[in-house]
Length: 200
Length: 200
Image 1 (cartoon, rainbow over the protein chains, first blue to last red):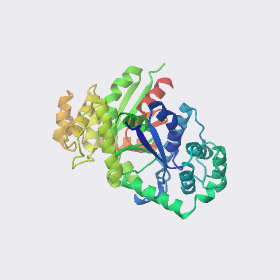
Image 2: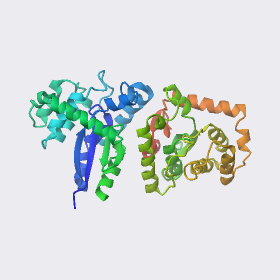
Image 3: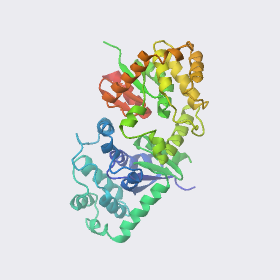
């Protein structure tokens, strides 16, 4: 029998993706589920829905609520989180996603992703900056040179392909989890998605 | 010491509000939390955000996902739910909200609300129809004549006032739960909201 499997779709600009990134490793291991970490970009998907930026910016009431909700959730889970959104939020996450694609070819890839989220939501760092990503690579035990390789045409094309795949799967937000054709949206559904993977 | 208290904001057109309506009574009783059932309308709030209808209709991928998510959740909770959205979905919920305002002056009010959700999502009935609401009133042990009283100017004005209050509180979706100034959005946050009420 094959090991149960789940794909974790995340955007580095997404606050709720941060929540899942910090716990999916342990939760999946406990249940014997293999996880594919799949960085992608919400930007092109939001754009196709007629949004130019994060819905949290377009609908301020939702943005204010989201930050408060994140404060409550991170406090309950013992995770760091900024008191207020940085000026440069939501982050331009395309370079981070390109670097993550390369980092995730190594066992240290998930740790790199966690370091990016911590730089962003604990330290308030600008994750669009190559220096920030180089630091995160080093912290995860990977080569900072991956930042340069990340912008090679083949790697950029690979990310575009991933975004198309996400849209074709009906993904419209982050984090999302897929088990075959079954889609789960939001950190609130991580438990259910892992259960689905473990029992299907 | 006053009894802990929570306000439950719901729209009869909202699928996730149905989930909360069916369980909030028991959950709140178990924790000793008093609940005010507060029907309101998402329509004017969505309209202020630039939407003419439900976001689930505007963004079809989200609508498809939501229905599947509801199927999984209702199956897990043993609740009935339609296989596909009825043609008249999302419902025009204004008359139901007006009737609920009157019904909720009686102890049978919550049962009337549950009957409306069951008519809508179990039976596929058109809840904008006065006959449907009359049936729900009867099932809850209330007078069907409340349907006529519901459209009196004073009751219509009261509902408009409620929607303004909801907007002033930063409510942007349903169900929502408020404990003082603390806002929780979504059936996924019902547990956390009740905990907040019980411990604050």
